[in-house]
Length: 97
Image (cartoon, rainbow, N blue to C red; front, side, top):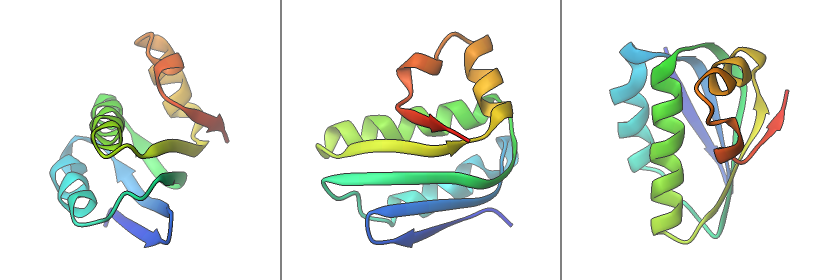
């Protein structure tokens, strides 16, 4: 089961971030606060697809609306490859795995 664990100014996403989990991930994230800074740890993400990129951009839009500095850490290699393929890697603030 995909879930987001919130620890202060850090979220850790665990499980798959694929199309079947998108609605669940977005619902979970809406219930979590975004402070001045937020780090989203993707080290426990097991599978990604194009829906993952949509979720990341939704979180970036929300962070911008709430004036939150958002950064993704432990970016999985398969997500790096996918974002590179779509030409959006440079639009996502991240640190490599």
